[in-house]
Amino acid sequence: MDRRLRTIKRNQKWQANVMAMGKTVDVSTVQDVRIVKFDSMTDVVEQSDLFDEFTGNRRGQNRDTTETINAHAVNGDTTRLAEALEIADKLIDEAIAQEPRLARKPQWVRSDDGIFADAGLVAAGDDSPCYQMTRETLRDQQAAGEPIVVVVSTDDNGAASVEAAGAFIATVRLAQQFRPVHVWWQGAWLREDGGEAGYILHAPLVSNDMDFARVEYVLADSTRDGLSFRALFMAAKVRDKLQTVGGLGRRADRAYMPGAQFVSHGGIKPDAEQVAAHACMWLGWESRWQIEYKHEATAESALQELPEENPTQYVDTRTDAAKRRDAAEATRYYKDQERADKKKAAARVKAVKGSVMG
Image (cartoon, rainbow, N blue to C red; front, top):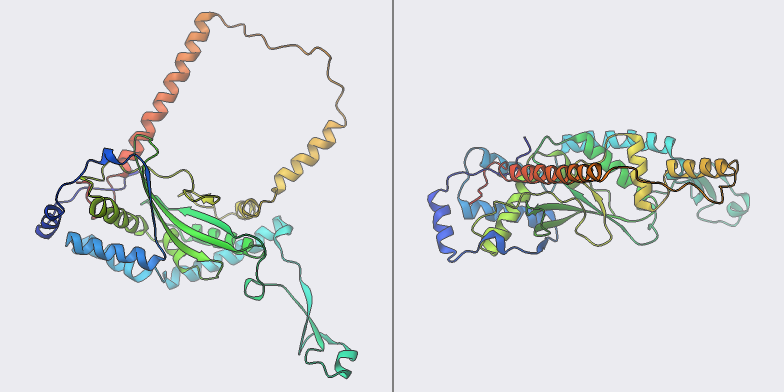
């Protein structure tokens, strides 16, 4: 079931802190998108600690969540990260096989040791008279161009996936060969009625480096949505003094960061084709399928006959009654979809263990 928050009974300390807040405001007063930007995941973890201080609820599953967050949100899980990196290595090789453009071409570089030496450089006493074949890596080169900004959303308290982490890491590493890549975590708590209002949390995960520990956490750890909620609680309940966060459970369907690429809570599938396609998209390249389609379309267009001078125009032969019936069915379909979306959002606001709606 797609649920995200649940109600628990406040303890004495929690109740006292709520009373000390004074006058509160209704959640309906949130009529805009309030973005909370953190400088690091360490700062987000600090919100988790403040949440524990405010609620005084450090027992059972809530305590387990706190311990997991403190252990892994910044440094990741060593075992899971190693597995994710192994998956990434395999996907990178498979993606390059499908999309050769993603392979940095090897080049000859001079060094003090290599495959062969230049006799002239040796005679001249050059410190680097040898040549060796090498492939540029992120650490060896300053990637050119504006950075690619990627926002990854994990608005889900469902099962986390080390495979999803591996696929995402593979995509970042492929793109990093050509341009800097900055990755941000986005946690969204938006109004369930579909209104463009609520809270968005942003925290940096990767800044053109090869440290994927925090990426591993937000994609492969089941407490990630709990941490997102704790940061929401401190912003909405404590800072903005909302009476309740009930009604703020909708996921984001886009990046709330200008010009950023968006990866939804569904993530990138651990499939070489998907990894290659996402890397090309981030780099602004046409996908292999687009290139092949254009090639085929161009070839086919050369075989087509000239169009008729007066092509037959479409004539709607439906009766007025049929038109009204079709319009009514379309309206009913969109209303059913809207109700289903609201139901999913409301359910999400009942699931994060150790949280409260009130």
